[in-house]
Image (cartoon, rainbow, N blue to C red; front, side, top):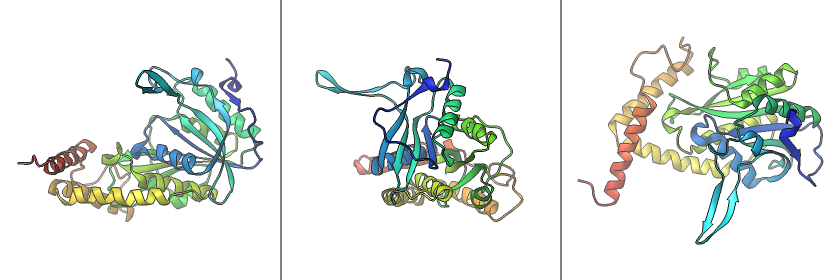
Amino acid sequence: MNHPEDLYSFVDGAPEVPAGLHLVAALTGFADAGSAVAQVTSSIEGVLDVTTVVEFDPDVLLDWRARRPVITFEHDHIESVAVPRLTLSLVRDELGQPFLFLSGYEPDFRWNAFVAAVAGLVEQLQVADTTWVQSIPMPVPHTRPIRMTVSGTRADLVEQMSVWKPETQAPANVLHLVEHRLAQSGHGVTGLVLLVPHYLSDTEFPDAAVAALAGVSAATGLIFPSDALREEGREFLSRVDEQVAGNGELQRLVGVLEERHDEYMAGNPIGSPLTGVDGEVPSADAVAAELERFLADRRAQGDGTAD
């Protein structure tokens, strides 16, 4: 398998893809803080009209020992096997507008070939532009709107939406490489990286997915279902606020993050919300440990076992 086209196949009977569609990409597997990418995928594939057009070969792209299929065992037999999928689908948004959606796992192997394959599909299907999403943990408070870093070829979106524009080096995911390849070829591409509170990065944080969908809407004009996510987000933040209100140490830690965030957003000469400010910066482990202790106390009280 020496050609990018060997990584995928078109699904038999799939509908013809119109030219000029937006491509939205959301791959799980690396730095999905707040499970934003996973929730975006579930929101799109679980609600909208989705038809798979292209299926990528997991035998070529996946390390099966690291990401094993999940079986459902029924008493004395295997009822089903859920195999990880990486697909390109034709989807219609809430207004019926068609777009392409690249979703599933981030490949373990053959990244260069995968990047070439995606670039080839973009050209073959005459894609209008590409927008991809990722989320990373940052020391920001959950009491402020989720911000983002925007990259790519859309200077207007960078100016309007990107609040943190670092000059840094960081581990890449495969969609960074896709963005770089598409931008070099003159294709319009936008990367949206959500900055999620680091102490909530291991949870399902619905507001992260809402912010991601809003960012994609701003880049493409597509309309996505978000009512359920917004309601889940209100309930989630209510529980977090309750936990913080009942713990003075948590209040202090969140207060430090709020002060740092507000100073940065007010235009103070802080090069990054990560460094160069006065005061103690609570680590993700410190905040998470406090939250865990508080939750453990709440569970004990609910069980009637508290001292």
